[in-house]
Length: 173
Image (cartoon, rainbow, N blue to C red):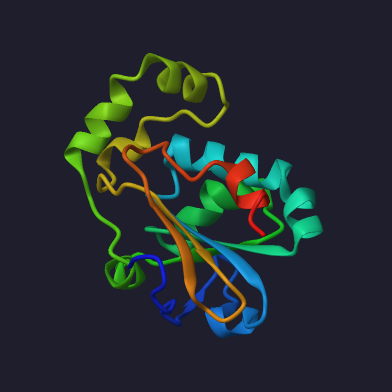
């Protein structure tokens, strides 16, 4: 997917079993974020950051939808424990990942592992665990989708902890 493409509609279940469709958000700005497996410490740190900044997202009218390459049960055990005020969707078969062009990258994994700053930050975040090592090396991606379902910005991460900066999303006019 690239800028000025029409967002691909979908219906997926969140980790609580609710069916969520992109069309439910018609007429609203959306941050659509894709993550690795639910135990990924970098992913959980980002979810934590989104939760902390959620009031700012509400004030700007931006809805957050997150997608994990995990089952509902896995999400409940990890990211779901944070009680996010936004939807966390399960896509264990990666169908939506494929539609949005989300890639796997061993280089992205290595780049993350050799970044001392990122590793130290995640090790002291409270989200660090070794379980995510077995997960596919999916690199995160973010999409800013406007009220008419047009993708205004794509952000394909370069490593496991690389997402569009929150301030950039909040500055979206």
